[in-house]
Image (cartoon, rainbow, N blue to C red; front, side, top):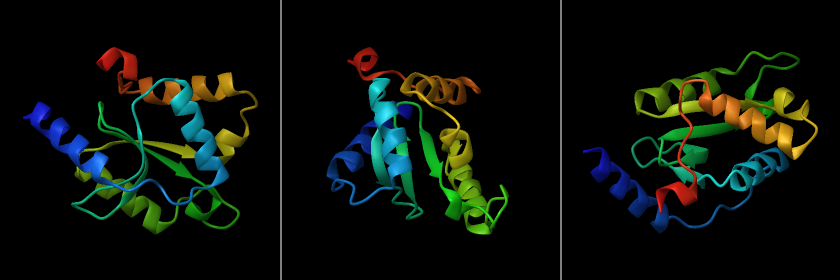
Length: 136
């Protein structure tokens, strides 16, 4: 069943148009994901919910959400209701969620630090997906 799901997911992924616009923060995260050699899809739209996932790692069913300042209440690190609800819905849909808060990302100086940060976040729950070279 999981192989069938992966095959269907790739059919959907390949049929989607390229992403339109992304924030500089999200583009930086995507660049690091690419540098790590991870299979990914930018701005994947989940057909069941209509949610757009910033970055999908299909081989592990991981959604990376890049959470800029507009995902949080003013002058706080408390996520807004819409962000909390989206996270909850994605979990119910079977996605593992990795949130990248802007203040944590902004505190990282080098590309290596950023990639280490992503590796750590992905490995927290043994969610590290296979790299593109490992799946071929």
